[in-house]
Image 1 (tube, rainbow, N blue to C red):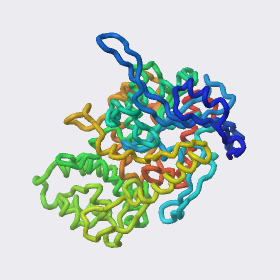
Image 2: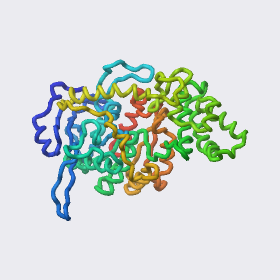
Image 3: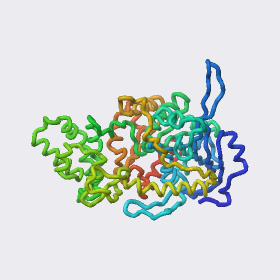
Image 4: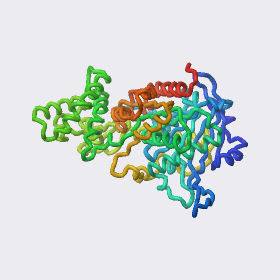
Length: 497
């Protein structure tokens, strides 16, 4: 719980701001009751200045500020920095602030919003999080430029930060500055990313190790996407149709299309069909016999919950946005993309696909309200400027120029980081009902990591009966919190309880 008498900026805020080159740093003191007892910790909310070194005609001309990046850091009081782990966390988008991991899973406070079928009404709730990863690791939440309160400085262009390489370079610099200022080079270090944050984490791991010599202990990859071709449904994208099939089967199970069967049984059948028969069927095209096509249509209809007529008209190819609108069309409902356990009323009974994601509709309000209340009330931040949960037009304008004419692909970067540092461990978290980064696509990426067989012991996998943000499902949140804490303990060389 927070001690309200301590939740005020301390007198040394100005001094610390000078050391960190941080704008508007606010320091507050708190305590949290965890399963291991009372934890006293310090919260620091501020904006780290990103600098650019100027060189003209081979002459160093100093540094100029380029942006201010908002961070919220939590550090345990009186801990040994050489043994206390630190985890740097961010979400994805690209273009999302870190509110989701911050207020849903890792941070010392969490939002109470209910769950699919039983959502809480506004203004929602905010409670202590005894399962916070803070019990075993210090935490630094980073909002990339244009998200949250992070902005370019006057005279600088935001779009210069909106691209794959520019993004990982700026986040790496924030991490380097924090580690240096806090004297944490000898601490066990972890990156926690969700969705595109896992893409960022893979690139960061390689960059931090190769360019800065900052070797990591582990990556916490939640709802990972390491190869964007697994979600490419455009021309020639037959691979994506196979990658999504197990997710479709899980979603159909969730909505009552597989009565009498377990989720595991349904998923395993879909996995087997997607691994062998389905890709073969798709590659055959017009060469399929009538009997082969009829058999494929029947199997796909049974697994996905769609009608045989729809599968036939779709030419055996089920695009995910269309699936979300089609599965429960006769009930007047769309199913969620981020979490297909959620449903919402369809805007039109004849629309090609759903008009909005009901799972995003359900979570956006609670998380936006909870974090902004917490930022001002508990952390003492006085800035009343707009907070962008999603940076304006950032996702639409994001540059992938490094992957021109090819899918975004970071399997090679993660592989290189693991080969370079054989102690780097990776924890993968999957949601059965995640339609944004489906578990079977992520599994396929992991299987293609270019690492020695011995290093596969550094990989671990956990599955949860929820979606992309599996922690909105309370049993999954509790289980995932325990899994992440155990991973950090083990990979930091700390004794497990």
